[in-house]
Amino acid sequence: MQKKILISLILIVLLPIALLAWLGLRTAHNEQQVLTTQVQALIDAQLVGVDESITAYFQRMQTDLIASATQLTQSNLSGDSLKNFTQHSGQVRQVLVIDADGKRIFPAPDGTLSEADKQFLQRTSAIWDNPRILTQGAGLPLISANAFASSLRKIGVSEERSSNAHGLPNKNKNATAPPQNEEENAAQYGWYAWHWNAELHHIFWWRDAKNRLIGFELSPVAVMSEIITLLPATNVTRNTPALVTSRSRLINSSGQIVYEWGNYQPKPDEKNVAMRPLSHPLGSWKLEYTAPPLAGVATANTTGILAAVLLIGIALAGLASYLYREHHREVQLAQQRVNFVNQVSHELKTPLTNIRLYAELLESEVDDIFEDVAEDERLQDGVKSRKYIGIITAESQRLSRLIANVLRFGQFQKSQPALRLQSARIDEVIRRCILAFTPALQAKDIVVRLDLQADTLVLIDTEALEQILNNLISNVEKYAALGGACHITSTQSGDASMIDVRDFGAGIAARERVRIFQPFYRVSSLLTDGVTGTGIGLDIARQLARLHGGDIVLQEVDSGACFRVTLRTEPAQEMS
View 1 (cartoon, rainbow, N blue to C red):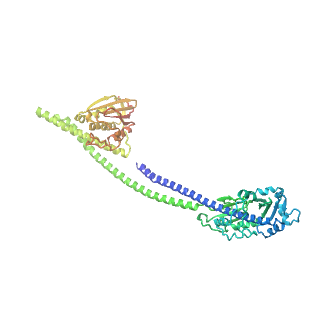
View 2: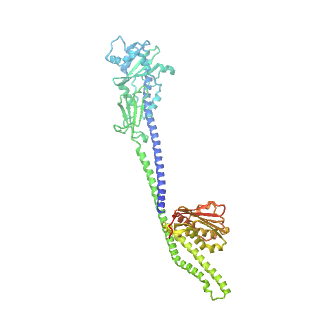
View 3: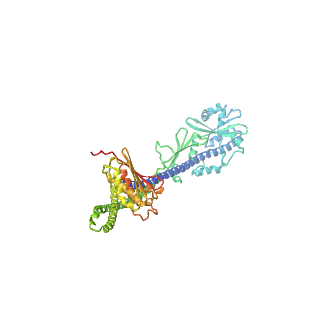
């Protein structure tokens, strides 16, 4: 019992702790997932902002180049005006002009070419072989100066840093192309990108009213410089707490780092948290974002949850310890009470046995005592004496059975008692029990009918069987007197014996049939209220039957109650 209580208390402590720990860790994990998703969204927003600022730079460049091309067409695209434009532009490295038939106009095919012109023609040889590839590059939507400034503010770059971002001779920063609808725009200009000597080059082309193509080759160094100017400073610190420690990188098509910013220094083999390819015309470049994992937040949450679970566990353990000590104390007190009752019962058993013995002797000698008395007086006094002696004997027997039950119950509480098997006949044991109960049964007009067929000599604990039968017959005498009858049958088959004890009283309700074998439980009804009893008789009878390899069950009958006792009884050798 103590082990069961201890295990139960341990489970009461551990199960809530385990459940709380699981719920806490799951909550921490969910919070970590939410935080990771939020941070990832912020990172994506940062990379999108950078990409939009670079795209806005090309859009602004596109707007200014369209305005410049419009001005150059007013001078009929003369060689001097084109050379002059190239010399004064900080962004444009070279200009080309192709007529409507795909023939080169500038650099002049029949003129003297400078070394720069020769290098340009070499770089753009694919265009001269197939001028149509130039117009395959799409253009960007037009953008105003205000929209460009807004895109810079999104990534924390002031307009002053990008005030020289174009370096075009056109002084009107809000200049736009002549009004055209979107379908015309899609076919009138665009961006062409190609690689030469492991370097990305860009040409912005524009088609004039005479279907001539005017192309502006941008200086890669200047473009890279201006893009870097648009990006945040190297050691910039974000206002967003989750992005304070990070490193962003701009990587070209060769995998080289063009520019990086942020106050976090990643390890050489550390993987990036996010990556975003840049939009056209830098589609072969990409942005990478690297940051330390959010382990600190997860660790803090987990530590707090575990600390809370630990405190709850300590409180539950303290409560369980208190309950265990209280239970142990109550068990000790109960055991002391049982020991006291057992001691008293033992003390009562010897004098009670003597009282019963002398009462039986006195009953057998009552006629000798009144031998010298007149016959009428002797008869009258003898009847009274026998009656008084019978009452003394019956009550002493009842008290003996009660003491036997108490002692047996105490034995079962401490340990399982051992059987003392001996050769005996079950029917003889039944007859002895009935003989002991005859005065009490006759006093209540209960007729006993016996059908005994268990006369084979078997190995049995007669004392245990007598106690079983005494408890069953005592219940008939107490609770089934109104039935007026008690039927007892016995049978044997192999190494099993069976005894049925049936009464014809009020019976036992279905809801009570399981509980009647519980110790100290008594059925409450008009018939049982006021009847003395301890409530341990059936429990002791069942335990003794099970100790004997059998059981006691309540049989289904049409009236009254029928208890069936089954015992394992090995055959005994006949004594010659």
